[in-house]
Image 1 (cartoon, rainbow, N blue to C red):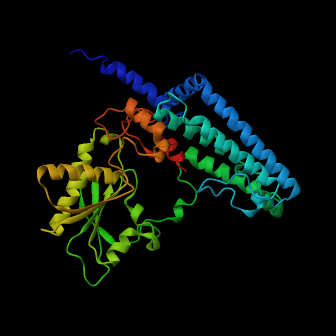
Image 2 (cartoon, helix red, strand yellow):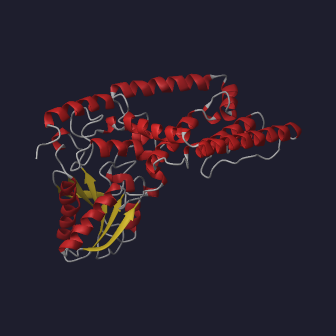
Length: 394
């Protein structure tokens, strides 16, 4: 059967996508445009939903006017709407006093209205609803009173107290940040975190190495050690010491102090030479190779495997394959912030919609990551080319 498109023509498209990705932070404008069109067309075709939004807008306007009247009579009048759980932007007591309270209340009511406007529009695909709702929330947050220097009571107080020097400091910091970004330097302050001293301070040594991983065995920190070891599989998009950040918040240190023999995978930073690595390579050279090395150190013992983030997903795949082959070396399986079912990941997926749209539309299915958009024709995705999806999480 003849292919629908030759590799040469697809390469032209991928080159164009890679070039465009450098100007869109690796996100797909087409994916967002599709979501926006889906929402806009269905909203325009839903008179009932539009009438509902008009009614909600009127009700919120009345609530705000009643709050203004109450504040005029009593500056300590209660709020007409409270921030969502986990939203601490207006937690300072000064936000309870006018005029700051009025600005905060108006913003929160508007935020609530836009949530109503972008959700439950008849006919909109759930995927597109999540994209539009999340994008609207991000756009609104840009204009939050807490982000406006002359509408934020905390910033105003500091400006007055410092005689405006805080503004000059901000400009100077911005110039430094831009300079580091242009020259490819790490962010300010990263030089203060030295591996082995400030982070990853739990003693250990590399006992195994292949093309894709290094396996670290941590030194015991107790009088006796459990017979069955622990193997930690972190995600390959982050450093191994995500679970060993510092002595007071280190899972690794906690485990060794409790008498466990702990091993941890450290993934290789990929280059263009690794563009042909597949998911099965990560399974074989990663999880399975590490498991073999652990068994060589502690033979005949079950291994308690723990996977973090994508490392947990990969570990689940490896465990399923082991079960299929009758390999019973795993004594237990623990997943930390990891997913095995991506059909309905829940609310956090909104942060990844633009990126997953790109992955599904433009990545070869057998590859680990997208070789096109923002990858600068290298066939892999360096950190510098993937800021968009991570910035959206913050």
